[in-house]
Image 1 (cartoon, rainbow, N blue to C red):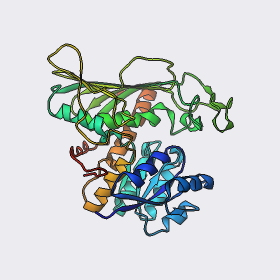
Image 2 (cartoon, one colour):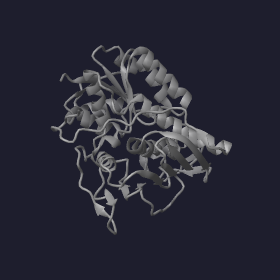
Image 3 (cartoon, rainbow, N blue to C red):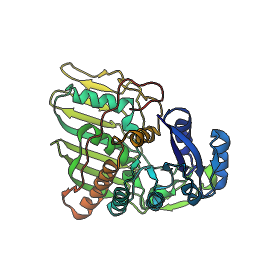
Image 4 (cartoon, helix red, strand yellow):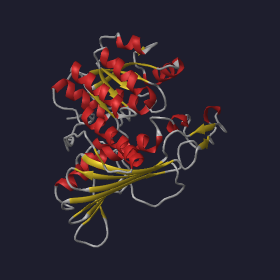
Length: 371
């Protein structure tokens, strides 16, 4: 199958694993070039990964007829404008999470893509990896019976102690729900299907944050917090299952599972959805006392970021539907904004969007292959 030619916008830290995998792991993808507002970053990545072109701007990249997919790895604040620019240029786009900071901007992207017959896909793609695909098989093969509930927890004390540029995590488009919520919500939708309604509560526990890492000479800088940093949500799934989720940048320590799914005949513990596998953290409880480990049944247990792009590339070549598609991305944004709206209004609110559960991955694949 002919390779799909890719351009990457944004050469920050996350670009390293994308470039490594898109250029050296997946057989369907080829990165022709990159661009970034800081040209030194492009030169550094070109020197390390050897892609052909260091574009001086996004406009220059979009004028290159070879480029079929533009991968957007910028800060969330710029996702909307860049996605629209790429689509207007007639190219497919893959965007880091989240798709957009709100439904309105997400819907504009969705409608433009549909009008032009172009694909929009995006992160996270960890749900396509070995762990969560194995969990999907365990559920659909009936190991826990009918799923009736799910509990998800993403708890930390924020990013200012370790991230080189933590400011955007506390600005509009950031916060723990919009930063990490996509991993958890995408995983739950993949396993249980779409969400019908939500309720929520939110809080800003600390109005100001202080950067305590020494990266990029920002130690001691104060960050004004503009978004809720502790969000508790309730989800009513279309399937009838009831779920809870807590995402927080306000918690120093905790001892709660990442995700647990409860069924009529047993329970399933899901490893960290920010990764493609978890060390012996897949567990099922059924008919016996205690928990036991389940071996991985699928490929891509290593850090395979870009797997969703490879899947999208196959979809472009074959005409099938990509798994990390725009309907899924938009549904996640709809749910996340729904938690905030429900908290502000003190109501249970319907989720007006929906999506299909993505198709399962193939169990047997050649190295670098995606089907």
